[in-house]
Amino acid sequence: ATNIVTAAGLAVAADAVAQKLTGDGADWDWARTFWMVPWGALVSGYAMVKWFTFLGGLFPDAATSAIELVKKVFVNQMVLSPGINAGFFAFVILTQVPPIARMSGANWSELKAKLKKDLWPTFMQGNLYWSCVQTLNFKVLPASLTVLSTNVAFLIWTAYLCIVANRAE
Image (cartoon, rainbow, N blue to C red):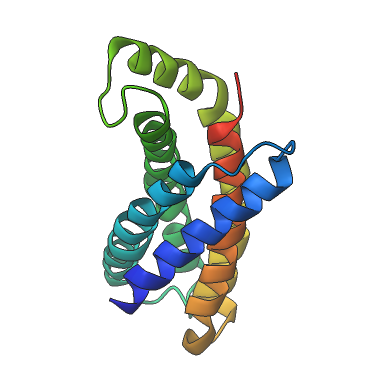
């Protein structure tokens, strides 16, 4: 429950940072901010905890073995990253482009265009960013600081994703 609430709050904060950085004096997009709550809670707060528990079981020696650490970071980036990024782009289109919460033909077309334009560059940026973050988390930082480090990194990355996902084509 704590992870879910924290992740939802961080997702809202990340969207606020993104809106502030890209704002042109327009009114605040409260609907966009509202929709970050379920994304943060369900994906970042719940699903990611399950994913990292699974990943920890696959690579229990990552903190002491360089090979296990590389494998763990590699699997995390090759499996989680594309799905999360594509899922976020789809979520933004699903929640921001009318008709809301329904993938119409126009929304599918917009999603395909978004994925074609932004998925690969976002995936590459994510690999650079998260490989560094997760290597520190899995190898260097004590377990007591892993959650804090991940939360700070998540706030920064989600703000970046919000900017990419919501920018006009």
